[in-house]
Image (cartoon, rainbow, N blue to C red; front, top):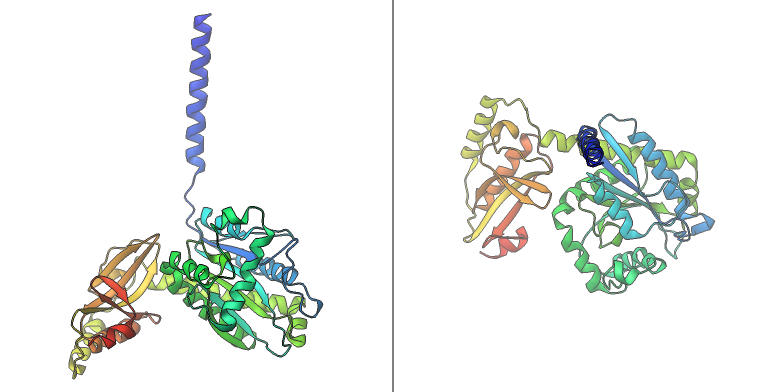
Length: 376
Protein backbone atom coordinates (compact mmCIF):
# COMPACT_ATOMS: atom_id res chain seq x y z
CA UNK A 1 0.00 0.00 0.00
CA UNK A 2 2.83 2.36 0.90
CA UNK A 3 4.69 1.41 -2.31
CA UNK A 4 1.62 2.25 -4.38
CA UNK A 5 1.35 5.62 -2.66
CA UNK A 6 5.00 6.40 -3.39
CA UNK A 7 4.54 5.32 -6.99
CA UNK A 8 1.55 7.64 -7.36
CA UNK A 9 3.46 10.53 -5.78
CA UNK A 10 6.36 10.02 -8.20
CA UNK A 11 3.98 10.04 -11.16
CA UNK A 12 2.33 13.20 -9.90
CA UNK A 13 5.71 14.88 -9.43
CA UNK A 14 6.83 13.95 -12.94
CA UNK A 15 3.57 15.25 -14.38
CA UNK A 16 3.95 18.50 -12.45
CA UNK A 17 7.55 19.03 -13.64
CA UNK A 18 6.54 18.22 -17.22
CA UNK A 19 3.72 20.74 -17.08
CA UNK A 20 6.10 23.40 -15.81
CA UNK A 21 8.58 22.63 -18.59
CA UNK A 22 5.87 22.78 -21.22
CA UNK A 23 4.59 26.02 -19.78
CA UNK A 24 8.03 27.60 -19.86
CA UNK A 25 8.45 26.70 -23.52
CA UNK A 26 5.03 28.14 -24.26
CA UNK A 27 5.98 31.52 -22.78
CA UNK A 28 7.80 32.82 -25.84
CA UNK A 29 8.77 36.46 -25.33
CA UNK A 30 6.51 38.70 -27.38
CA UNK A 31 8.51 41.64 -28.71
CA UNK A 32 5.79 42.88 -31.02
CA UNK A 33 4.62 46.50 -30.96
CA UNK A 34 1.39 46.29 -28.95
CA UNK A 35 -1.42 48.76 -29.67
CA UNK A 36 -4.57 48.78 -27.52
CA UNK A 37 -7.56 50.22 -29.39
CA UNK A 38 -10.43 51.65 -27.39
CA UNK A 39 -13.82 52.41 -28.94
CA UNK A 40 -15.34 55.12 -26.77
CA UNK A 41 -18.62 54.55 -24.91
CA UNK A 42 -20.72 51.44 -25.72
CA UNK A 43 -23.71 49.54 -24.38
CA UNK A 44 -25.88 51.70 -22.15
CA UNK A 45 -23.46 54.58 -22.66
CA UNK A 46 -24.31 55.80 -26.17
CA UNK A 47 -22.07 58.87 -26.09
CA UNK A 48 -23.39 61.90 -27.94
CA UNK A 49 -26.32 61.71 -30.37
CA UNK A 50 -25.62 64.70 -32.60
CA UNK A 51 -28.02 64.80 -35.57
CA UNK A 52 -29.29 61.37 -34.56
CA UNK A 53 -25.94 59.61 -35.03
CA UNK A 54 -24.62 57.40 -32.24
CA UNK A 55 -21.08 58.11 -31.12
CA UNK A 56 -20.67 54.61 -29.68
CA UNK A 57 -21.39 53.03 -33.08
CA UNK A 58 -19.13 55.29 -35.13
CA UNK A 59 -16.21 54.96 -32.72
CA UNK A 60 -16.52 51.17 -32.78
CA UNK A 61 -16.63 50.97 -36.58
CA UNK A 62 -13.53 53.15 -36.90
CA UNK A 63 -11.70 51.12 -34.25
CA UNK A 64 -12.50 47.83 -36.01
CA UNK A 65 -11.34 49.25 -39.34
CA UNK A 66 -8.17 50.64 -37.75
CA UNK A 67 -7.49 47.32 -36.07
CA UNK A 68 -7.94 45.44 -39.35
CA UNK A 69 -5.38 47.72 -41.00
CA UNK A 70 -2.85 47.41 -38.17
CA UNK A 71 -3.21 43.63 -38.01
CA UNK A 72 -1.87 43.43 -41.57
CA UNK A 73 1.48 44.77 -40.38
CA UNK A 74 4.28 42.46 -39.36
CA UNK A 75 5.47 42.93 -35.80
CA UNK A 76 2.29 44.67 -34.61
CA UNK A 77 -0.19 43.17 -32.14
CA UNK A 78 -3.66 44.67 -31.70
CA UNK A 79 -5.81 44.37 -28.58
CA UNK A 80 -9.34 45.79 -28.28
CA UNK A 81 -11.11 47.03 -25.17
CA UNK A 82 -14.37 46.15 -26.93
CA UNK A 83 -15.30 44.70 -30.32
CA UNK A 84 -19.05 44.77 -29.78
CA UNK A 85 -21.68 47.16 -28.45
CA UNK A 86 -21.01 46.62 -24.76
CA UNK A 87 -20.32 48.86 -21.79
CA UNK A 88 -16.75 48.81 -20.45
CA UNK A 89 -15.75 50.69 -17.28
CA UNK A 90 -13.16 53.40 -17.92
CA UNK A 91 -10.71 51.93 -15.42
CA UNK A 92 -10.97 48.51 -17.08
CA UNK A 93 -9.95 50.01 -20.43
CA UNK A 94 -6.69 51.22 -18.91
CA UNK A 95 -6.28 47.94 -17.05
CA UNK A 96 -6.48 46.01 -20.34
CA UNK A 97 -3.66 48.12 -21.77
CA UNK A 98 -1.49 47.82 -18.66
CA UNK A 99 -1.86 44.05 -18.43
CA UNK A 100 -0.89 43.79 -22.10
CA UNK A 101 2.20 45.93 -21.42
CA UNK A 102 1.10 47.93 -24.46
CA UNK A 103 3.25 50.37 -26.39
CA UNK A 104 0.31 52.60 -27.30
CA UNK A 105 -3.26 53.26 -26.15
CA UNK A 106 -5.60 54.93 -28.66
CA UNK A 107 -9.15 55.87 -27.68
CA UNK A 108 -11.61 56.98 -30.40
CA UNK A 109 -14.53 59.37 -29.85
CA UNK A 110 -16.75 61.87 -31.67
CA UNK A 111 -17.27 65.46 -30.54
CA UNK A 112 -20.40 67.52 -29.90
CA UNK A 113 -21.43 71.05 -28.88
CA UNK A 114 -24.71 72.92 -28.73
CA UNK A 115 -23.68 75.14 -31.63
CA UNK A 116 -23.99 73.21 -34.95
CA UNK A 117 -21.26 75.24 -36.68
CA UNK A 118 -17.99 73.96 -35.12
CA UNK A 119 -16.26 71.13 -36.99
CA UNK A 120 -12.85 69.50 -37.21
CA UNK A 121 -10.67 66.90 -35.53
CA UNK A 122 -8.91 67.09 -32.16
CA UNK A 123 -6.42 64.77 -30.48
CA UNK A 124 -6.08 64.92 -26.70
CA UNK A 125 -3.27 63.94 -24.36
CA UNK A 126 -3.06 64.32 -20.60
CA UNK A 127 -2.49 67.80 -19.22
CA UNK A 128 -3.21 69.89 -16.15
CA UNK A 129 -4.82 73.06 -17.52
CA UNK A 130 -8.55 73.03 -16.81
CA UNK A 131 -10.03 76.26 -18.10
CA UNK A 132 -13.00 77.24 -20.24
CA UNK A 133 -14.33 74.73 -22.74
CA UNK A 134 -11.34 72.41 -22.13
CA UNK A 135 -12.47 71.68 -18.58
CA UNK A 136 -16.07 71.23 -19.71
CA UNK A 137 -14.87 68.70 -22.29
CA UNK A 138 -12.98 66.72 -19.64
CA UNK A 139 -15.95 66.88 -17.30
CA UNK A 140 -18.31 65.54 -19.98
CA UNK A 141 -16.03 62.64 -20.99
CA UNK A 142 -15.33 61.69 -17.35
CA UNK A 143 -18.94 61.77 -16.10
CA UNK A 144 -19.56 58.34 -17.63
CA UNK A 145 -18.11 56.88 -14.41
CA UNK A 146 -21.50 57.47 -12.74
CA UNK A 147 -22.86 54.65 -14.93
CA UNK A 148 -20.41 52.20 -13.36
CA UNK A 149 -20.97 50.10 -10.28
CA UNK A 150 -18.76 50.94 -7.28
CA UNK A 151 -17.37 54.01 -9.04
CA UNK A 152 -16.53 55.56 -5.65
CA UNK A 153 -14.18 52.66 -4.90
CA UNK A 154 -12.65 52.34 -8.37
CA UNK A 155 -11.87 56.05 -8.71
CA UNK A 156 -10.90 56.81 -5.12
CA UNK A 157 -13.30 59.69 -4.63
CA UNK A 158 -12.61 61.30 -8.00
CA UNK A 159 -15.12 64.06 -8.78
CA UNK A 160 -15.54 64.84 -12.52
CA UNK A 161 -16.77 68.34 -11.60
CA UNK A 162 -13.65 69.20 -9.60
CA UNK A 163 -10.70 70.92 -11.34
CA UNK A 164 -8.47 69.69 -8.50
CA UNK A 165 -9.33 66.07 -9.29
CA UNK A 166 -8.55 66.42 -12.98
CA UNK A 167 -5.30 68.24 -12.27
CA UNK A 168 -4.12 65.30 -10.14
CA UNK A 169 -4.63 62.82 -12.97
CA UNK A 170 -1.81 64.21 -15.10
CA UNK A 171 0.87 63.68 -12.48
CA UNK A 172 0.83 59.88 -12.82
CA UNK A 173 1.47 59.93 -16.57
CA UNK A 174 3.87 62.84 -16.88
CA UNK A 175 6.63 60.57 -18.07
CA UNK A 176 4.60 59.47 -21.11
CA UNK A 177 3.14 62.82 -22.14
CA UNK A 178 5.98 63.75 -24.46
CA UNK A 179 5.58 60.62 -26.58
CA UNK A 180 1.80 61.04 -26.49
CA UNK A 181 2.21 64.54 -27.89
CA UNK A 182 4.42 63.20 -30.68
CA UNK A 183 1.74 60.69 -31.70
CA UNK A 184 -1.06 63.25 -31.35
CA UNK A 185 0.67 65.63 -33.72
CA UNK A 186 1.16 62.91 -36.28
CA UNK A 187 -2.52 61.94 -36.08
CA UNK A 188 -3.66 65.53 -36.59
CA UNK A 189 -1.23 65.97 -39.49
CA UNK A 190 -2.57 62.79 -41.10
CA UNK A 191 -6.17 63.98 -40.78
CA UNK A 192 -5.25 67.32 -42.35
CA UNK A 193 -2.93 66.10 -45.11
CA UNK A 194 -4.35 62.70 -46.03
CA UNK A 195 -8.10 63.11 -45.44
CA UNK A 196 -8.26 66.90 -45.93
CA UNK A 197 -10.12 67.41 -42.65
CA UNK A 198 -9.93 70.57 -40.62
CA UNK A 199 -7.57 70.01 -37.68
CA UNK A 200 -8.36 71.86 -34.48
CA UNK A 201 -4.99 70.71 -33.22
CA UNK A 202 -3.49 68.95 -30.25
CA UNK A 203 -5.22 69.50 -26.89
CA UNK A 204 -4.26 68.65 -23.31
CA UNK A 205 -6.70 67.67 -20.61
CA UNK A 206 -6.99 65.17 -17.75
CA UNK A 207 -9.24 62.37 -18.98
CA UNK A 208 -10.05 59.29 -16.93
CA UNK A 209 -9.92 56.87 -19.84
CA UNK A 210 -6.15 57.49 -20.12
CA UNK A 211 -5.59 58.31 -16.46
CA UNK A 212 -3.84 55.08 -15.43
CA UNK A 213 -2.38 53.86 -18.71
CA UNK A 214 1.33 53.27 -18.28
CA UNK A 215 2.25 54.01 -21.89
CA UNK A 216 1.84 56.85 -24.40
CA UNK A 217 -1.92 57.43 -24.78
CA UNK A 218 -4.18 59.64 -26.88
CA UNK A 219 -7.90 60.31 -27.17
CA UNK A 220 -8.96 61.13 -30.73
CA UNK A 221 -12.05 63.19 -31.51
CA UNK A 222 -12.91 62.34 -35.14
CA UNK A 223 -15.16 65.36 -35.59
CA UNK A 224 -18.45 66.92 -34.49
CA UNK A 225 -21.59 64.84 -34.92
CA UNK A 226 -23.51 68.01 -34.12
CA UNK A 227 -22.21 69.50 -37.39
CA UNK A 228 -24.58 68.20 -40.06
CA UNK A 229 -21.99 67.82 -42.82
CA UNK A 230 -19.26 66.35 -40.63
CA UNK A 231 -21.66 64.03 -38.82
CA UNK A 232 -22.88 62.67 -42.15
CA UNK A 233 -19.28 62.07 -43.30
CA UNK A 234 -18.34 60.19 -40.13
CA UNK A 235 -21.48 58.07 -40.37
CA UNK A 236 -20.44 56.66 -43.78
CA UNK A 237 -18.26 53.61 -44.36
CA UNK A 238 -16.03 55.70 -46.62
CA UNK A 239 -15.52 58.36 -43.98
CA UNK A 240 -14.81 55.82 -41.28
CA UNK A 241 -12.31 53.99 -43.48
CA UNK A 242 -10.45 57.19 -44.38
CA UNK A 243 -10.17 58.26 -40.76
CA UNK A 244 -9.00 54.81 -39.68
CA UNK A 245 -6.31 54.68 -42.37
CA UNK A 246 -5.06 58.14 -41.42
CA UNK A 247 -4.64 57.05 -37.80
CA UNK A 248 -2.90 53.88 -38.97
CA UNK A 249 -0.41 55.93 -41.01
CA UNK A 250 0.26 58.16 -37.99
CA UNK A 251 0.91 55.14 -35.77
CA UNK A 252 3.30 53.65 -38.35
CA UNK A 253 5.11 56.98 -38.66
CA UNK A 254 5.34 57.22 -34.88
CA UNK A 255 6.72 53.69 -34.56
CA UNK A 256 9.22 54.24 -37.37
CA UNK A 257 10.49 57.42 -35.74
CA UNK A 258 11.04 55.62 -32.45
CA UNK A 259 12.81 52.78 -34.25
CA UNK A 260 14.99 55.26 -36.11
CA UNK A 261 15.82 57.36 -33.08
CA UNK A 262 16.64 54.36 -30.90
CA UNK A 263 18.53 51.85 -33.00
CA UNK A 264 21.05 49.22 -32.04
CA UNK A 265 23.11 49.33 -35.25
CA UNK A 266 23.20 52.70 -37.01
CA UNK A 267 25.82 53.63 -39.57
CA UNK A 268 27.76 56.71 -38.52
CA UNK A 269 29.76 58.96 -40.84
CA UNK A 270 32.47 60.03 -38.40
CA UNK A 271 33.95 62.65 -40.74
CA UNK A 272 30.56 64.32 -41.18
CA UNK A 273 29.99 64.36 -37.41
CA UNK A 274 33.41 65.93 -36.81
CA UNK A 275 32.83 68.56 -39.48
CA UNK A 276 29.47 69.51 -37.96
CA UNK A 277 31.01 69.82 -34.50
CA UNK A 278 33.79 72.05 -35.86
CA UNK A 279 31.22 74.25 -37.58
CA UNK A 280 29.24 74.68 -34.37
CA UNK A 281 32.38 75.60 -32.45
CA UNK A 282 33.16 78.26 -35.05
CA UNK A 283 29.62 79.65 -34.84
CA UNK A 284 29.81 80.39 -31.11
CA UNK A 285 29.81 84.15 -30.89
CA UNK A 286 27.72 84.95 -27.83
CA UNK A 287 27.05 83.28 -24.52
CA UNK A 288 23.93 83.12 -22.40
CA UNK A 289 25.10 81.40 -19.23
CA UNK A 290 22.51 80.98 -16.47
CA UNK A 291 24.08 80.14 -13.13
CA UNK A 292 22.56 77.19 -11.30
CA UNK A 293 20.71 75.91 -14.37
CA UNK A 294 21.68 72.97 -16.54
CA UNK A 295 20.37 72.52 -20.08
CA UNK A 296 20.23 69.24 -21.99
CA UNK A 297 18.68 68.16 -25.28
CA UNK A 298 16.22 65.28 -24.99
CA UNK A 299 16.57 63.22 -28.15
CA UNK A 300 14.43 60.18 -27.38
CA UNK A 301 12.43 58.16 -24.87
CA UNK A 302 12.05 54.42 -25.18
CA UNK A 303 11.43 51.21 -23.28
CA UNK A 304 14.81 50.00 -24.60
CA UNK A 305 17.82 50.34 -22.34
CA UNK A 306 20.80 51.14 -24.57
CA UNK A 307 24.42 51.78 -23.85
CA UNK A 308 25.12 55.50 -24.17
CA UNK A 309 27.59 54.94 -27.01
CA UNK A 310 27.74 57.09 -30.13
CA UNK A 311 26.96 54.15 -32.45
CA UNK A 312 23.54 53.83 -30.80
CA UNK A 313 22.70 57.50 -31.39
CA UNK A 314 23.67 58.36 -34.97
CA UNK A 315 27.18 59.40 -33.96
CA UNK A 316 26.20 61.73 -31.12
CA UNK A 317 28.48 61.53 -28.09
CA UNK A 318 28.00 62.90 -24.57
CA UNK A 319 24.75 60.95 -24.17
CA UNK A 320 23.14 60.51 -20.76
CA UNK A 321 20.31 58.14 -19.81
CA UNK A 322 17.66 58.49 -17.10
CA UNK A 323 15.24 55.75 -16.07
CA UNK A 324 11.68 56.93 -15.35
CA UNK A 325 9.14 54.21 -14.70
CA UNK A 326 9.15 51.86 -17.68
CA UNK A 327 10.86 54.40 -19.90
CA UNK A 328 14.45 55.41 -20.50
CA UNK A 329 15.04 59.02 -21.54
CA UNK A 330 18.13 59.88 -23.53
CA UNK A 331 19.78 63.31 -23.46
CA UNK A 332 22.49 64.86 -25.58
CA UNK A 333 24.99 67.28 -24.08
CA UNK A 334 24.99 69.31 -20.87
CA UNK A 335 25.61 73.04 -20.49
CA UNK A 336 24.62 76.12 -18.51
CA UNK A 337 24.78 78.23 -21.68
CA UNK A 338 21.36 78.43 -23.36
CA UNK A 339 22.87 79.47 -26.71
CA UNK A 340 25.13 76.43 -26.56
CA UNK A 341 22.07 74.28 -25.83
CA UNK A 342 20.39 75.63 -28.97
CA UNK A 343 23.45 74.68 -31.02
CA UNK A 344 23.36 71.19 -29.48
CA UNK A 345 19.69 70.96 -30.44
CA UNK A 346 20.52 71.85 -34.06
CA UNK A 347 23.24 69.21 -34.11
CA UNK A 348 20.81 66.57 -32.83
CA UNK A 349 18.26 67.55 -35.50
CA UNK A 350 20.91 67.29 -38.21
CA UNK A 351 21.52 63.72 -37.06
CA UNK A 352 17.87 62.76 -37.57
CA UNK A 353 16.35 63.62 -34.19
CA UNK A 354 13.76 65.99 -35.62
CA UNK A 355 11.58 65.90 -32.50
CA UNK A 356 14.34 66.69 -29.99
CA UNK A 357 13.95 69.60 -27.59
CA UNK A 358 15.78 71.47 -24.82
CA UNK A 359 15.06 70.70 -21.17
CA UNK A 360 16.25 72.56 -18.09
CA UNK A 361 17.21 71.45 -14.58
CA UNK A 362 17.75 73.45 -11.41
CA UNK A 363 18.91 71.87 -8.14
CA UNK A 364 18.43 68.46 -9.74
CA UNK A 365 14.78 69.13 -10.56
CA UNK A 366 13.39 69.64 -14.04
CA UNK A 367 11.82 73.06 -14.59
CA UNK A 368 10.23 74.73 -17.64
CA UNK A 369 12.80 76.27 -19.97
CA UNK A 370 10.88 79.56 -19.83
CA UNK A 371 11.30 79.61 -16.05
CA UNK A 372 15.00 78.84 -16.39
CA UNK A 373 15.50 81.76 -18.77
CA UNK A 374 13.93 84.13 -16.27
CA UNK A 375 16.28 83.11 -13.44
CA UNK A 376 19.23 85.14 -14.71
